[in-house]
Length: 82
Image (cartoon, rainbow, N blue to C red; front, side, top):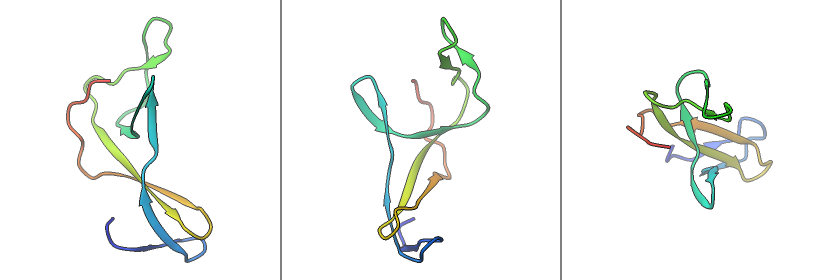
């Protein structure tokens, strides 16, 4: 996504960025995880992630109208432990 993109809504210029994911007091990069969410944890407040593929999510924002478009990287990040 390094080449300049045009907004599909207003034809403005799109710029690349990312959406942070906050865990406790830390900021990380938003991830897309394969499969349907399955409840996990003591009261089912979490989701199972073991054995799934993780992909970093990047976003494009239109500098004119603010439209957001999100993409998951083509290759998984690898083993991640949340």
